[in-house]
Image (cartoon, rainbow, N blue to C red; front, top):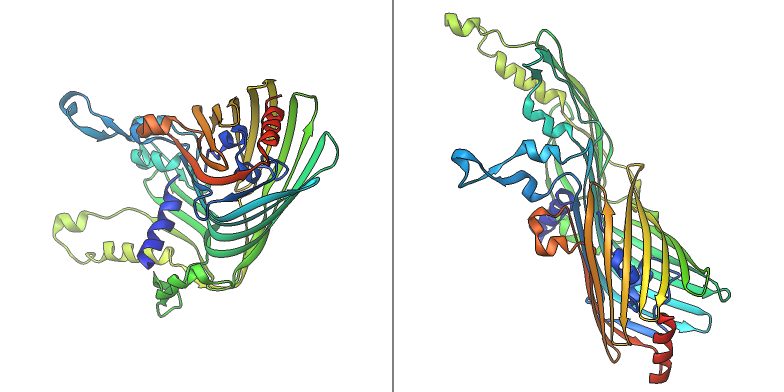
Length: 466
């Protein structure tokens, strides 16, 4: 169990969240669309999500490069082989790039209408992780000297950012129809933290001088909430650490708690045009049990190696390289202290428009925006929705995402009586050609949806088509 947990956590940080179910917003009649905007009311009467199967979601992204950008077919003598092409991968990257992932499972979910009100209840398990990394990492392949220009090359990694969250969520939501045009909604979420890794600050700079000497300056701090067995050296610095056996207890611990909120509204501007806006995952988790703060600050200076002793056979300075290695290690020794701390939920906000062109056809637009280390990461999705009576609802979407302008998506909900099965993705590219996809996204699930008697169901369908 411990090894599995560590593997999942590393996967979350090393994979890359980009797409996040924008197709779900325009595939009519799916109850989970309320997770995008708590004011949405896709069900007339009530619904019950299949336990543990109501919503299974995964999003992954790497805005920098895809697998086929870095693993490519060789040329010339290597034409029959696959090669690692760092040059091409770097050409696809921006100055700052984003690895991200998000996964969630709806353990339990249901909702019901009471006159002007609609209430929802959910128990979810969620995993989020984001890492911002600079193009500088790829530039290391050139070393620290420009031989063509005969000048030193400096490298800075100070734009790097890491944040990973794993938590349980108990959510209660309510929306109310204020009048024939305005509906407002809110969801309150009690959160129980499972694990966290977050960079408080990360500054690492490598400077090379004209005489060939080099200086590395570090100043970084990481907050973690993973049970660690830490050993220290004689001076009190971190010597080694390992995940302790108590990691198995993370999933049942209730000591790290917090609150989250979603706010949303819809406005029927005309008979055919519905506008929406929502703020999701506004809140925090306070970590106070099993916390660590690993930090380091130092300067390492390298003035070169005197090779004359090797030429003359004099070993009087033979320990220089060993001393250099010790100096390097000592420069980056970590301190550790605990103490409680808070993390945000990597919130987002979206604005949407849904235009009912025909009874069976709607057009949509949504702009979704994330904040990563105080930086805005926008997405824009265009959608076309098609409804075939009350049995089938579909959507086709086209999304622009960070450094990936062409993402074709689709959604489908099949209703056989009260039984509903659905699947949505914002990235069909990843299905047909996964090696070239920078974004992977899918959500699927099973619900039981009740819209009243047959004639009332047909009224609901007609309302959604008008």
